[in-house]
Length: 258
Length: 258
Image 1: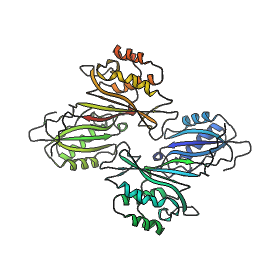
Image 2: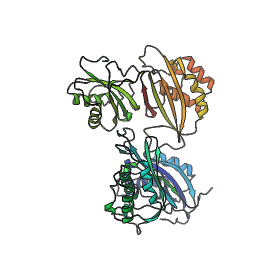
Image 3: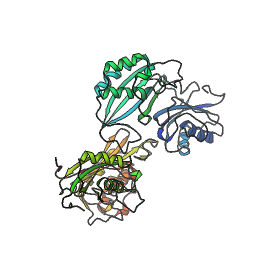
């Protein structure tokens, strides 16, 4: 899966998609539309042999991507731009191949140095008709400073069990967060979080809990107590999928072939 | 339609909607979903008598609104906020009532001092999966300076026949444009145009023509010649509806009752 066949050529794809139109990233049984499924199907048609697409992150149903990264191998190499254009013709408009590049066979989309997610919240009286599937509506003001004071505690290497959902299959609950902050964006506020990797539902559980501090329901102390208490049942409710975006995936060395 | 019944109370509504989900603003035969239609239906249920909703601008099928303004009269007055909340429950999520206010019966949504439209263009190689119904994709760079040099000629009181579509029912092709400029917004560019009123398809015809100057296909001189030539057939193609937003409607005196 990660090492190329002899004689195969490896490509890296960067993808944007509307998570509301797919049952998540990961391929499932036929008839269940997933991002990996539709792109693999198009690649298989283009290459004339079965193609496996390996993604950096397995986004859930409803979660969007601005910069998902994936790799695949083929025995029928072409110009990367030819692949990109052909894939955009063969896949539905809800997924776009932003970039395609040749990479050496040591490149593995799974082995990212860090991943960045963005969570969009709209704190105002009325919901948005235009952004209804793109942003989580909060019917009232949120205290950005209080949310940022709490978010600071997430930065660093910690046990994130308090924000880990039950079905998480990760071997360890420890993750290293490089950045975690709320940024005002017009009427919206965006939570940007960057980490070496994420636990199952980690960002949505964190956002749901930070919003409690922003509403003044939770003190900074309570947030810290829950975070360090490592008990998911003590944390806040999970924020919905449709506000979440996989925004960026970064690799240690930027390896592309000429 | 514009003067209230004796004893009636007049309200002003501010609306946001996703034009892709409606056959335009204006009520049509039953079964054809329009913004005016669904909001009037909800108001009629709330008031217990037929309600007519008068809008500032009749947006076409596919055209969005960030700040459409409308008024209605009722014999069953309530707190404006009660109307706003109830309407948001009774109407589909593709339309949102942002604001409701009591206004004197001399207020008429049609008699705006100016209207502002915004047109979103995404000039980049790949189309956007997330914004596919919100922005017009242009597969390549556009010269913003060239487009702004041409747009300057639109400002002022002019005959806009060159940008008026065939079915326009306006008595005169003369309009006064207060502002017309392209603004960079992240990866996108937005055309903002403000005028006392607009002719049929005027903004979309202007945008389609300005993009020809941005692509380097048309010189500034050719734009001016076509604009002053007053012949629609000489102008560029019409830009699609899904990039256009009625963004703001302004009235001479801000009249709301306490």
